[in-house]
Length: 308
Image 1 (cartoon, rainbow, N blue to C red):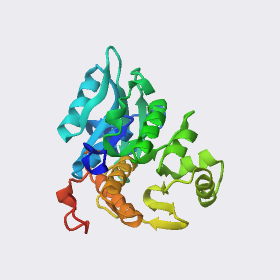
Image 2: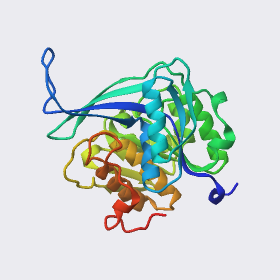
Image 3: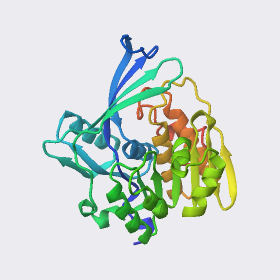
Image 4: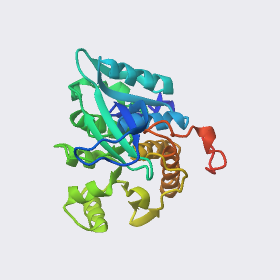
């Protein structure tokens, strides 16, 4: 199957959650109380939010994962459908609870703290996947929520000559294998240091590059932007300024989604870093991981390249 004839631009395998978001003036100390200045609910999850970003930007996206048959699970399903993300392989577990996150955002800075309940929905196993569906895209993106299934999906994707973008931010038994199978790794600086055991980010990056030889390694650093390594070069991408910064929740997930979509658009690495940084920054204009994600028409005048 040629990449041009495939049904999706990006297929995301991983977390789909329901987020409860509260804006606060300050975090209370133990034993204290604080008032919520604003409260909202919306869809979340690493791969899930990345796929909404792809869809908002005009791409064809699908989510592969699980949720429960509870109220949150129904909201998760509907939120994807409303965004045009394919949910045909988002499996519902009867009698199970969905992944729910409680996010508290500081009004002054947009920084957030997250408490989550993963629920008791099952993790996907390799036998739960449909190979024809997983390879009916131009790019596969996965996080660590279904790590066994992600390893199998990555093998199929590489055989189908798909780009494979990884979103690894916490340990699993498969992370080494997933790093071997991915083509483009995007990870936060703190996890790069944790994974490699190094204290210097550049040494850590060089260690990971030497062991896994991806096409590109991108290290995200929040307000300090990102650093990318590819073909012996080091590229520094500053964070894009945006006002006001309301909430940083989901900025990394949106960066991943925009980057994966940029690969399918044929962007070279410098252009894709700039594109992803812009989209992730614009996301921070509103409360929650998804509300502020720009649609492609909003990028007119901000992004020099036309989107399909």
